[in-house]
Length: 174
Image 1 (cartoon, one colour):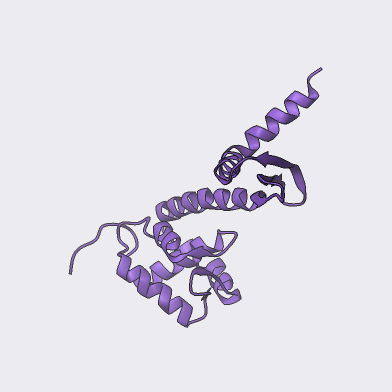
Image 2 (spheres, rainbow, N blue to C red):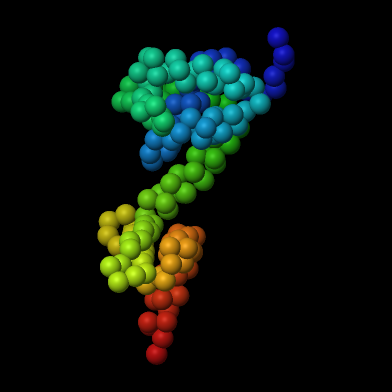
């Protein structure tokens, strides 16, 4: 058997780490994302990880819709009880990765963009950014082509906060 370096080696520790990570995410994640977050310790192999996920689904700690994974109530309870058993350095790495993903997922859920074809030609592009409660800004723009509509959506999605701040600054200038 190949020797692996890292703090986590046995399946129980891997399962606890998986529960720990899922506990810190605001929504279900794909298998690939969960694997990237879990393989933060060199002691974990991909095959052990995949086996542990399957076992956690079988024991109903994790639920899946076939594409994404999240905790069940049983998983939440066990994650809360066992998280202190994860080595500190692994917890720090996992928390950092989960925090970055949590930020991206929260941001993505607050920014919306879409476009529709106008009856007389062109496209209406709908762009909005919310604070999680209500819209902070909502814009409707005209685009001459689908490519331009998509560019407007992509630009807004990438820069929504800056766009909002610049509009507010311009409006409030005396």
